[in-house]
Amino acid sequence: MKYTLVTVAALASCLALNAAAQSPAVSAAAPSASAAPAGPPKIAVISFQEAVAQTNDFQRRFADLQKKYDPKRQEIKTLTDEIASLQKELQAQSATLTDASRASKTRLLDDKQKELKRTGEDAQTDFQGDMQQTFSSVASKFVQTMDAYAVEHGFSLVLDNGNQQLPVVLYSNPSVDISKAVVDAYNVKSGIPAPARSAAAPGAGEAAPLKSPTAPKPTTTH
Image (cartoon, rainbow, N blue to C red; front, side, top):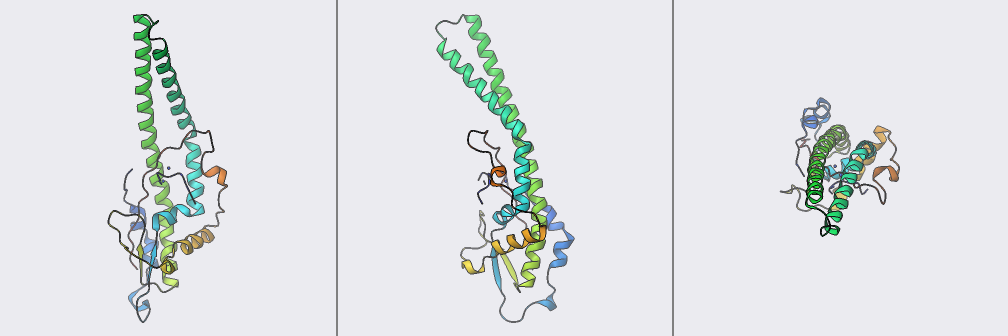
């Protein structure tokens, strides 16, 4: 699924996921020492960030978040268009404008540019906060499903092979990647259907979405 993260990248900044680490349900799902499977340990890998973002739950919430910020995107687009129009006027009429008119238009252009900068920064900050909360809410539940899946299938260790500055997994056979299986299990458990494709991202000609932070990933043990 291609979602508007920047990557909006990808859901900029690396954020800690305290909700997943503190969830009592996560620790309760971990197998005890006596329940460890006999024989060689089974190891699986998962692209955690990407898997969370592929769940129907996250996609629906993300589509709702995009709709929430549609008015702000339109406001930014309007300011951008006004600035472009003023710049063209100043260039086209530079030889005929009086000093007073030129000064007035220049001040107006400067005010619009400052307003655009302030509006864009405020919107981006608010959007990143909402994105963090959205991802964390889904990820904390996704961890529970992942733990339950690992216990059910006898995995002793699950490693994250997603994009990282210092990769945990340098190589893994595709057969040990449980990303899709856990996403499917989560979708079944949540009972949330996949959102309509048209609702997940703006269509052609619409205002571009705000950027999102890089989604955080928890560390879990089994």
